[in-house]
Every structure is written in structure tokens, then in C-alpha cells.
Image 1: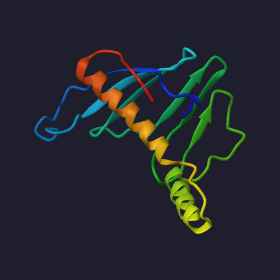
Image 2 (image 1 turned 30 degrees about the horizontal axis):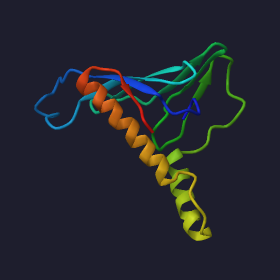
Image 3 (image 1 turned 135 degrees about the vertical axis):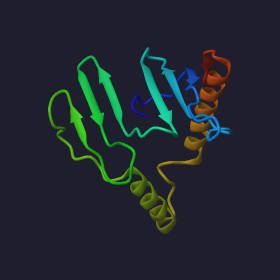
Image 4 (image 1 turned 45 degrees about the vertical axis):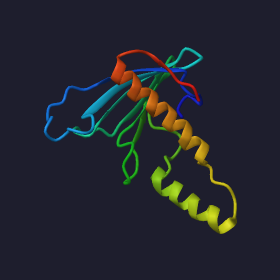
Length: 141
């Protein structure tokens, strides 16, 4: 979403399980990299066992960081150029739920259609395949 593009390929690895008795049926965490057609790369980490709540984007002209980034209580944005000139929106989940309700009320399509969810599932499946095989997996959306 940050690049406005769909990744063309992914690589991934599963974190070693520090609690194998607890994480029997699911990974404890994953690291993965997404490659994009324009040459951009994005690195990610997720975990069921550590508290992370940060998004950071870096580019030639500076960086932007949101922390906390994914919770329900709001965001804090910092940049390499000082405070942002825009006010971050309230919780993205709240905005999405409100939009769903308005779509029903106003009989209009959602900004987050099922096709977007399907696209995301294709990407997620490619990440799991890359983690399982240790190979680079092309994303075919």
C-alpha cells in the first residue's frame, strides 16, 4: 500500500520457535522481503510473540515513522524533516468499519473491495510458500 504497487516477488523465513509447545500449529514469527517492479524493496517482520507496533519508510529524501502504527488508539508520526504537516487519521480499523456501515446505508461500493482482500491473500500465500521453501516466490496477482 505504501508504494502504490503490488509486489512482484517475495522471500521469507520463519523465526526459530522459542516456545514450540505454544506455537505448535502456527509460526512464532516471520521476516519477509517484497520486491516491486520499480526496483523498490520492502522488509517486514511479524510475530505472535513480540510486541511490535511500528511502520517505517525510508527513501532518498528522508524517512517517516509511525509508532504506534497498528493499534486502535491512534498514531504518532515522526519524520526526518520534523513534525508532519498533516494530522494522522484516527484508527484505520474504525474508518474502515464506518465506511462499511455507510456503504450499506448509502448503497454504494466499499473502498476496500473483496478483490483487494483476494490480492492480499495471494501475497500472504506467496510469503508462506517462500518461508516454507526458502526460495524466492513470484507473486501472481
